[in-house]
Image (cartoon, rainbow, N blue to C red; front, side, top):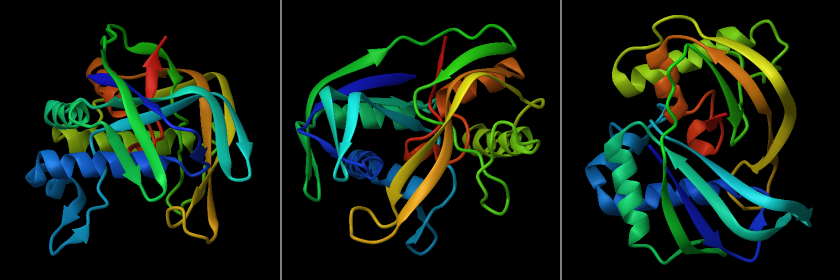
Length: 240
């Protein structure tokens, strides 16, 4: 299940993804605090670092960077996806009650929210395109190229964890990733929100690829997203 929101704002900071991370957390805390604590709090008020069963993507038309701000045409298009109906319904209902969301100096005015039709996956090999770039890294934290021999192994590793956290069991059989037309991108994020400080540069990949695997796995990953940092605006995919 997925939906699309359109927000109006003048521009966005380069590290805009944190705004939408904050938006999701703020809505869930208001709509269902038990669910919020389950997703984000571990034990004695510690941050829960486990993967969450959702992903999102932000699409900007004709973006241009100007002094750490991004100028673009039209509205901000924000896609949200989750196979968990409880998460999706709470976020959707919270957005329906929202007119404006503010994060520090940033302000988003909600103009439209639309439920999107679900694409049918009926084959064990599917052609996808990225809505937000896919980030894969190894155990040491090194980002991996799609041409790296370990890319597939680590893709299977994080997919297994994501599926296990969502449904209680991991991949049914190994996934096979085949790039069709992929391009490397480097996403620039501030380590601590928008405060002055060092940036984190995240290497990722966007474009078209084929993914083969068990039918149930592909259907769930379509809604969960693929790779690391899915809950921070990476790895959302669409069926072509």
